[in-house]
Image 1 (cartoon, rainbow, N blue to C red):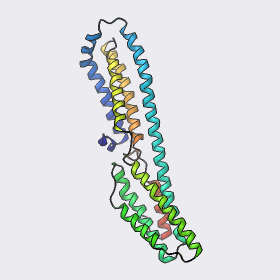
Image 2 (image 1 turned 90 degrees about the vertical axis):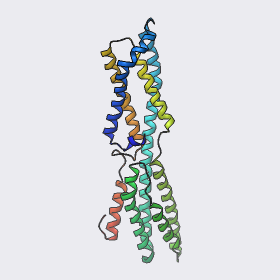
Image 3 (image 1 turned 30 degrees about the vertical axis):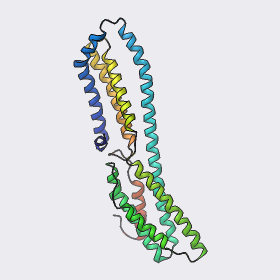
Image 4 (image 1 turned 120 degrees about the vertical axis):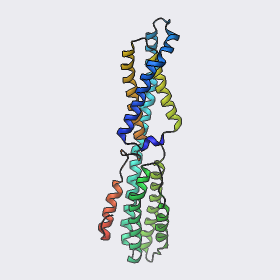
Length: 266
């Protein structure tokens, strides 16, 4: 399953749809005749199957719809947490601008190093559902520099308290991003989805119709199921593959930091 997420969106859709259609066609040609022998004497079989498929299709369609909505909402949540993390880093960078120079420069450099690390190291790893090593070292270094600062005026005390608060909010948003990089729909739900797809195709095999009609209608149905499954997979892991969320927020942030610190991006 994890290997599929490393494919591009188009490759994933083509692979899943092809697998469903081929399974339906192979079953219609080689497996369907055996099941047809079991029910060939049943009167009004198509009418009964039509009613069963209609009722079953409603429940299966609701399940697929709910999963698609849930996956889309998860994508929106991930985008929100990424934006919140970027905003927190930006707020920290602007806050420490008011620090004395001997404390300000190391803090801003650390924040820029972290932003660069996210773009160059963490994001490529998240594309493959992994975590990059080295991020905690940068964060620990940043935390040590923040806690090492000793305010000398009431204004510095207020500013430092706000900076400390923003730092822990930043840690929370970062944790959300890292968690979302590998989380998704539970495997048991994927089992239910695939089982439901198999039962749908199996019921289509039982209809009394010509092989050509079976291949055509079964192929259309399985292709649509494949499209829905592909859509849910893409939305379910919003940081994976070429359709994943880009680090644009951090790239813009890095560009701003480089302008302030007087060094070129990259």
